[in-house]
Length: 613
Image (cartoon, rainbow, N blue to C red; front, side, top):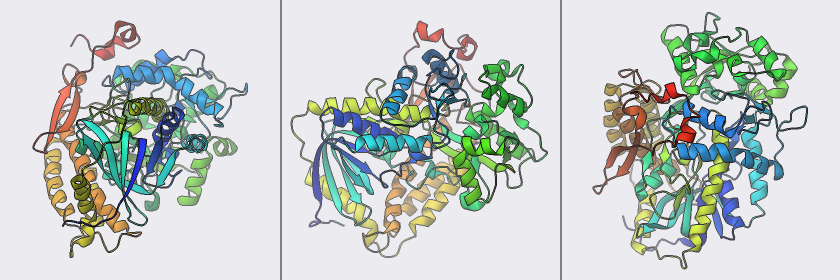
């Protein structure tokens, strides 16, 4: 179908930022402060960004709770947590700049919790040697978004809320703009741009049980891939160990790691605190003299005497805890509904309400569970994509000129597994860098490039096609089948046969997706929106599945039951790269980051580097 007389609006901006979460807002603030004209395109309402769901805190080596902390230790923890597949250059930048970004937020009005001496309070989190997470109760992400929005509204940027971007235009290897439509009235829009920043978050809605809200369908990844950018490390999906699994109405909603950080114990159906049975060899020394009772450990925390060897096993890295819960279920020791019990009710009731107000009210109001009196029932939930668009470590630019990515949309910092708290500091560190370089790059472009009318008409036709089909399947059915399939075959435990089946299933789902009926009319039509998301969800799911099939080992957020042992000699040294070939097909290759310089290598655990292999 060709639409010849379809009207669309044209906008011109130096920098267009796709996504209005922490990374997008921080990029917009930085680009605007340099004098660039900035448009921010948000799939949802401003303030509804997924960042607000980040509860535990933002990791930065402020050394307020323990003076021994430093950026070097933060760098070490990030590399160790990422199983040394991180881009060490991004890990260094992140560790060095995160404290300044937190202090900057305070200067802009962020109200962090305070120590008795008035410093920014920091809590312990899984994989961090010292208490490192600056926090505001259990609503840190919400305060971060509030602060950035308050700062951003005075910068002169234009915000286009409830718009979905469907294509990035480029010419001669450089971006020239993008196409979007309004989710409210269906109006069509072309944005001419000199630079574009992708800050679109992740893709966890591709799994049936996830902590992601409805926006997290992976369209940012797909936009970059379709435009010719490279994708990296897409096999590494973090399953947060503690998502709500009961009642069904709140299935998948995150229970912040802060609950375990404040002393929450994981118990099986026998009442046993099972995490002591799952301490990996690489962490064994840290638990050599761990005190057995969480109550005693919390007394150490409150007294400010916490040392690494006093860290409870519930605060091991997320991949370890999630796999442990899965193992308990496989052994027949699961909670009533197939997960584990998370119990913090032994602590003082008022302390729980003070430290974890959001968790208390969430369970009380949504699940009729009083966490001050009874345990929560939790289990692994798809939470974060360590992979994403490959970027230059120094500028956040992709292999396409003028196209940048930051936050969960980009890859490199987290390696095979992200440490809790590193996501929020990632947003503000690399959001700033992306915005700065996008604005600088835009200054070198004198005029907006013309976008061929044929390309605009082609994407308009594609966007409107579901509305003009006669009959066709309900898009919700296709999406539901896709998410269930990914949960079953590309979930927390993977095998070659399941992954090969998943690739075949994705081919079938792709054909079904091409023939769905989007309903009638462009105004407030959720069926139309969902029909347009299927293509992105299919391609992103295929990236994850293909990369998981090729990596024949278990590491971080990728577990192969048929290859349970990490292969340090080969797979521990290479990162996957996915791109589109000249025939429009998906290709996968592998790269190695430059060697870690000696001054940084000496910060790492030599045994973990497996240099002898």
